[in-house]
Amino acid sequence: MTFSPAPWPRKLRSQEWYGGNGRDTIYHRGWMKNQGHPHDLFDGRPVIGILNTWSDLTPCNGHLRELAEKVKAGIWEAGGFPVEVPVFSASENTFRPTAMMFRNLAALSIEEQMRGQPIDGAVLLVGCDKTTPSLLMAAASTDLPSIVVTGGPMLNGYFRGERVGSGTHLWKFSEAVKAGEMTQEEFLEAEESMSRSSGTCNTMGTASTMASMAEALGMALSGNAAIPAVDSRRRVMAQLSGRRIVQMVKDDLKPSDIMSKAAFENAIRCNGAIGGSTNAVIHLLAIAGRVGVDLTLDDWDRCGRDVATIVNLMPSGKYLMEEFFYAGGLPVVLKRLGEGGQLNRDALTVSGETIWDEVKGVRNWNEDVILPLDQALTQQGGIAVLRGNLAPDGAVLKPSAASPHLLKHRGRAVVFEDIDDYKAQINDEALDIDETCVMVLRNCGPKGYPGMAEVGNMGLPPKVLKKGITDMVRISDARMSGTAYGTVILHTSPEAAAGGPLAVVRSGDMIEVDVAERRIHLDIPDEELSARLAAWRPNHEQPESGYAWLHQAHVQGADTGADLDFLKGCRGAPVGKDSH
Ligand code: FES
Image 1 (cartoon, rainbow, N blue to C red):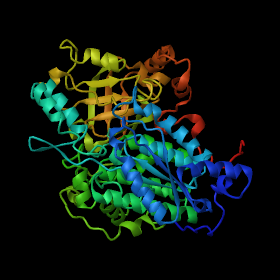
Image 2 (cartoon, rainbow, N blue to C red; image 1 turned 90 degrees about the horizontal axis):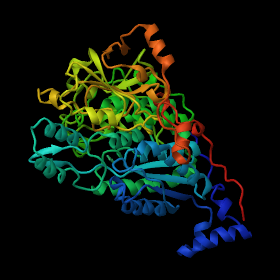
Image 3 (cartoon, protein in one colour; image 1 turned 180 degrees about the vertical axis):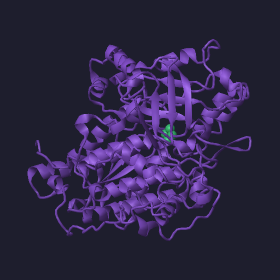
């Protein structure tokens, strides 16, 4: 893609606040001077907002204030004026009912923070799962020049000599306790080894996936995704990104120049190659909706179908992000895709260069971490999109995290009405279930939970685990943590709370899944399905006020990104009226 930089110098939007010598300018400028800023900082140089998702309650982003100082240094060096702005930070590990319910609220508030304030460009300082997509959605809707800097993953965890992956081992250890293979005391001891440095999850969970998506989209400097949080090169990356955003503003290089359909196709293929999180499906659809790119679930299946998973990281493989960085990180993967004809090489990046120019010269330093193609974890690594009478608008499955013997399966449904029903029944020895059954969980979608919680990877019943069985087919309208694994079919659309067929499955019905054929089928006569749907009535609570009401009234289905309907699209960043 060719990009023609805008002429420089020219008047920037921040000058609508700080330019000239009128009363209003003196008001805006004078207030800023109470922070000790010299007069010449307001001379028309780019004002860069460092949108910081630091929070003590988002521990994954707990080091971002320190990193912001390096971003500032880079902005100063390049002749810009940095201003650090705290923004909504939704932590995956604490926010209730689920951080996903607040991704759109964060995007809404940050979009207005960008539009309503005197900034010309933004550094998106992010890390934990929802922080990356929410800021990218805001940047896409304002279309102000923006660059992503992620906080980077934690160092490897180790317990008794073995690697411990964030999330992944939480699920493993908890199942081991249920199966009687690990004591509660050992589980508590393992807790101490899980988070041994600053940073995000060290697996290829959603945070690392979204960092990779930002880089594959071209919205971060090459190599950003994998650098550990505490590595000095993370701070170098922050400083270089600070320098770069100043030039991006001068050139007027905007998100809409970078996040083209070609860029999204690159990101989808990259997700398959890294064995990335299913959450990327929802987030990329939402970001595309903001920037005006027509991206659908079918694009995920089309682009990802023949992509081999070559990154040997948990939850699909055995290593962690630290080793991925030492092996060369995401640029090696993108180069592989480019060599295999699976990269749109001309896609533009924040550097002003094409993605191919950024990666063509890199080397793979560890072929056990980034695998040769003939040793890929799976040759069909992309997200599989299943359709059928149980999911007319689609459902997704991550083949690299699934058990091959379950990819074609017919089994008896065991239905859980919601997550509380699941918790109440799953440990009951009298529950009529075995490993051939299909576990069905409903009312956990965007409207149903509300917010679409990461509960789709339901733990197996203890009586099945005790037989040494570690996987069963599970179907829900929920999401799954990017650190989780199993033959788990997610995002079933329309969701049960919106009257989708999932709402009328009954325990005892037979369900067929055939991933190769992309098929999911409830084996009952069409007339019976129609009669059940006609008799269905909503049974979830409608909040009467507050954000929960807004979310419930306007959230869209997972198949289109679960954004709020009125937030789709790019609204730009007009400077608006001055109220003084
Ligand atoms: Fe925040 Fe994984 S929970 S990065």
